[in-house]
Length: 160
Image (cartoon, rainbow, N blue to C red; front, top):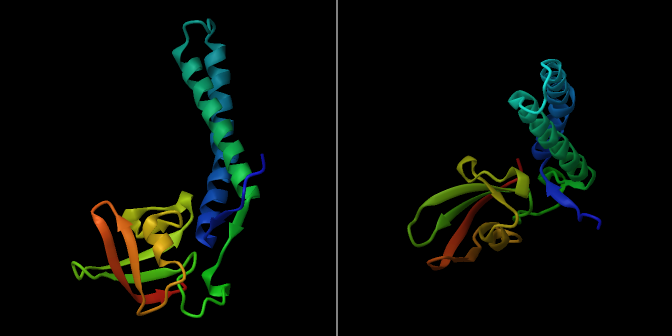
């Protein structure tokens, strides 16, 4: 089954590439060495270091495969290059006001792998992001939240 394209910001793509490079050039050679050293200790049936190293190797190889698959399906989106005309699009940073509480929040809309609510990055798949996509400054986004519908006014849209 072919994977569909995975939207990601320029920074998100860089982070995935950096992780893959580290796994290939640092973690994989290290774990191969650790397995060789554990083997050299003799009896593998009761060798906890060997078992742990083999488990770690399996995890590293799995993550390398996962990253390679993701990277081959990435759709890197730079909001600078989109002719979005002030609308909220993938990669945009949006300043919104909660019309109930008056609280202001700023979020960047990013791919699933990049989402970090504490860092102000929300997934494109999140209800807030889905409600904001296509809106412009002054628009009201109605978002279904656990406590009912929340209304947010779009105060600013930045492509940074």
